[in-house]
Length: 124
Image (cartoon, rainbow, N blue to C red; front, side, top):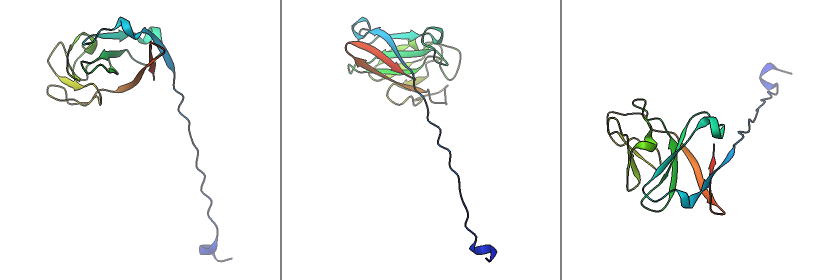
């Protein structure tokens, strides 16, 4: 059989990502316009995660550490669907993690958070 007629076999490996669900606590404990930090040591996540109860009534979750400096976004100011870092005033979109102004220029990681039977459930 000529070399160009030989069959080629490609092997694909599929890696399934495993997600972890962590129950944070009652959603009613986090008032609108407030945030809380979920410690990595408690949840088993690779980093601390901030959960925000935005003024639109929805819950959002981002990495807690600002991408510009070491500062806790859960200690920042929430306005609408944005959080402002308490150190240098960088702002992040709570829905997308997108950085909205300098000095930060790297987007924040987002995490899935939902209310299940009245409890905040974080998936990472």
